Length: 442
Image (cartoon, rainbow, N blue to C red; front, top):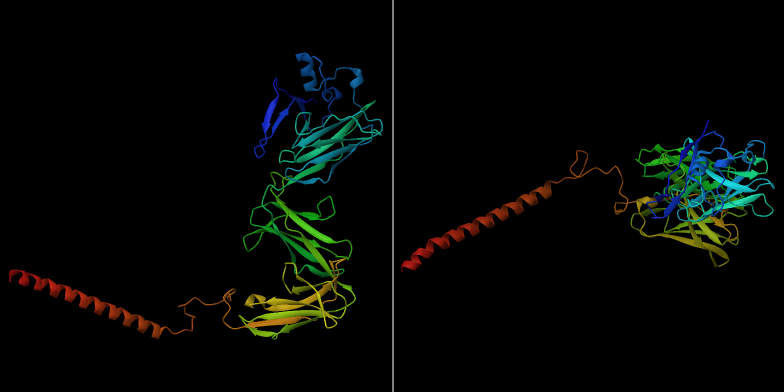
């Protein structure tokens, strides 16, 4: 099965839209997946050669121009393709694609898989170097783009030319650009503080209607997991990633992205990083106390104090059920104790709950001490105006126990007084009008 040509007499000028970058794309061969492309379709003329229209057409059509260009694909080792610094690149950031073959390689080529078509990426297009001579010792070459855009993202393969012909295609490289959509939020359920060997669920959520979410772990080139999005009761789109068992090493720091099915290599901005904290790794247990006491009235000032006789660099205060990161404070030495005071003023109903505190060192801030004993903070009273109870009845409803009799009587009295005053004013004005003609006649 032959290749369908995609040739024009003049170069094709393309605009990326967002950047306004002018890209000149020369003639390329486009073939269905699985079609062997003859080497003659891949070889470019020497600079300065005068090519006849017939020869140009032959090159674009992928026809053989001689026995020395015959292809023996599949008889050579498959090359390896990768991207540096990563295959997931922020928008407008440079990236280098490497292709490594054999020591006999004379030339490397890059091609892009777009749906069910193969397109050779040619010089003058997206890439600075695409027909690259091998670097010493001769087994690899790099093909670079100046800046990453949506147009650069996609699935790429490479192959190399040896004295016996062209190698088979490399495994695919998924080159992803990030920063094309708003970032999602990443949180840990039930908490980012996890005991060694424990499991946790990471929630990636967004108001944007992403089709899929991707979870990335810091230090790893490939995504940890990719899941279809689900509509949450709150109306946002989300994916729940199970993570674990969590171990003290290495560090567990995650970010997530969202993308749409029609552009799977074009991702959103990354979420803010979320680091899992492993408890029980330091040999001490801090204590947690509260002033003025565990039962307070809304609007009061409350201080939670975490302290330990062991040397502590940082104290962390965690609230049970809170998906966000714990509060952190540097410890202060006082009277043989290391302590930190977490202030809440004024306290509201949003502060009620069960708290624990931990200690950590500056050398390994993700490793925590044993948790303190739990402390339950109870908040009572009606002075809370920040987070009112959700089941408060609306004024005037059938379940509202308040009596409005006095208020209604006052309103009726004020209305009657206003009516009487208006009546007096009208009578006075009319009386003045009747006296004016008599005075004029006299």
